[in-house]
Image (cartoon, rainbow, N blue to C red):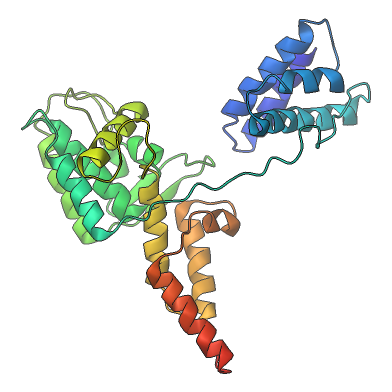
Length: 304
């Protein structure tokens, strides 16, 4: 009975465009846990016990909220389903990891390291140089770049299919970016492959995300941007954060222009809410300087 309810709940969310992968796994895990006790309805004690098996407070809190959403929906149909309270594990505040905003020199070092990947003369250095360059100049999610097909490179720009929220969008390309992609395609055409994926490995196959991330970490260490294995540092996702911040730095300083820019940037990045875009931003000397100028103008009675 619970399994059927879980399946309906998952289908509902996916029909609204959510991928709901982690949540689906957790919901099935809870349903199996409850059904192993022959329980047909959600019980608060069972939810708390199952959620309490997670290793951290944050994970226990997230588990509880996932099942609570299901319980709220089922309780509306049948009040024998109990809705657990939200504060059982306290308030688990989500901490924001500090983003690394790349300088132009750091990006150049990263791309230079990519161009020196081995084996020399293979598609590996060509592919990674093109892939990272594209992410730098467009702010694409890594997953979006890896899903690109050859047919997605159009005269109007890059067609991004089924983004994070299952929508298609068109990303315009600067002429310089288009030239570099054409150069990459010329090298790609010399490789025997049946793959229609835009970015391919040295063997002509599509690039899996774990391989790309591992290669990025190697390149970042080679370029002196990260410490050894196990040490923190800049992530491949920070290239997207850098795009957002540098874009904001180019914006005119008045409030109306910034407001228009933020809406446009949020739409471009494929965010559901402008508040999601704020999460991408990080203070830089340029932005702090603009804030200081605006604050001084306000203090003097001017407008910014």
